[in-house]
Length: 301
Ligand code: CP
Image (tube, rainbow, N blue to C red; front, side, top):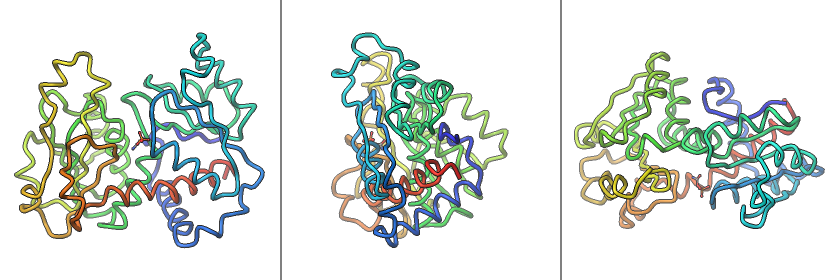
């Protein structure tokens, strides 16, 4: 079986296959009702989620299938000390695929080595979040296309797994990537190395002002408080790198502001009413994109 573990595994052709299928489902959601009527998807979320979990569930149900949910860690046998490997081996008997979110980097890959059903990484610590990346790319493609674009990626680039996956995936396209963060939250060295090796067009900045006027897309992220080793380090950077109506004055009229959500205070609510606000549409795109992913992986195409 194919798994979806990181965005690094995705070629341009893979990405286009998923996005084109997602567009077909988006245009005609009812068309998919019978496609996976006999299938069950197991949801194992060891960390909180609203969008990823609910949109996978919606996607599976729109494909005619259903979900079985491990539920909160607190009410599962993880509390009794069960290992992730054992949980994965047990759950593969309950579903035709496993969606896994876990705080440990590399956890989805590890789980995939124990099971014979597709594993979809729904976020592994500060590692990757590839299904998010596909819905991000779907949204970017709708607004600006995926070639000859300039994208600003701002905020917590160190711990933000959506950033790591998106940066890797964008190397498949003619995209100029401008990373904007405080020095302490720069992209991890390993990601910078991979981007450099791929020949990606990458620049790093501490200030948004210089790059904002040239951007097609500004991808804002939350400072990942839960991943900071201590509260003091978090407080030192919290509240920086946010945008409001004043920020937008220097941007192009057709700028798309994206955010994987949840937001805390990175985007002023006043921005929600502007044409730039693309983040709720982005969250909704999770359904057709995850329908396409499940359709491909559960059929083992
Ligand atoms: N974007 C995202 O992964 O959101 P959730 O944590 O709510 O799933």
